[in-house]
Length: 316
Image (cartoon, rainbow, N blue to C red; front, side, top):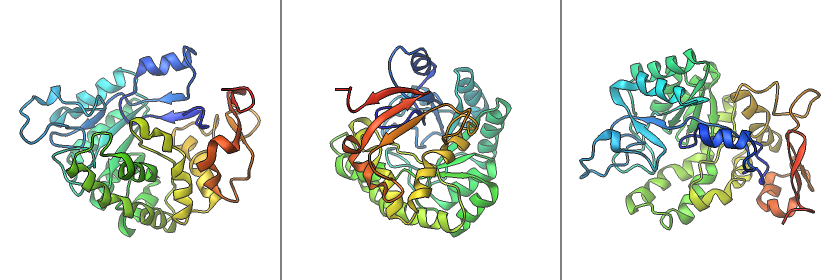
């Protein structure tokens, strides 16, 4: 990720204190990491990977190590992730593609549970992010006070207006659906899960247009799994193809993301006094963000905190 120009990343489930500390201490080279430890899921929700015939207990269930099932003990679960060092809390507020027993259209956790999770995050001075596709799941999440909606593919005019009024960020993840359609089965998605992809794939670009038309602030996300992470930059051009001007695409991956993280005084723009996280590239991305699709050909250097960490002339 760092070599692709991402000096700071926000993980949405799975990364932990040890990984973040190893990066901070320079044990290995990588992006600055914000992490939520495990995402919170209800029984039968997007973080519950038990098949319909699986009678394992909920606490034995993880989404490839990414989630935890908590139901009525949402406060305890949120507090526990914060104890582990979480810099934000992730909640599965609706159905998802990679989970076997829910529907894309389902809402997850009651409004009271969602509010309780956000209360715990707020008490610890961290924010909450919500996995949500449908207008109903999005509106529930906004009412609960989450700071960002992840994906939001089925966003409509009503839910976009609710987001804009509340100042809730939208984090589209267009790259992942295209990648899943190409390689999902190879990486282990079942036929049923693969079919879900097409419920949200085509809607993703429409959600960008709706969000833009209603003044929703957008940030950049990828949500790519396994070997599909190589497509991390492809979502930039996809956002532009959906009607977002190139300058707004660039803002989504720089200043808007910094604002979402509460780090706008440190990162997100090139100004005196800020951390010098920068990329040097051969072409002007304001003419077209498609240059990022050819990253290896177009980048020159990646800087993190003012130091060159990757350079095309010196790195293998």
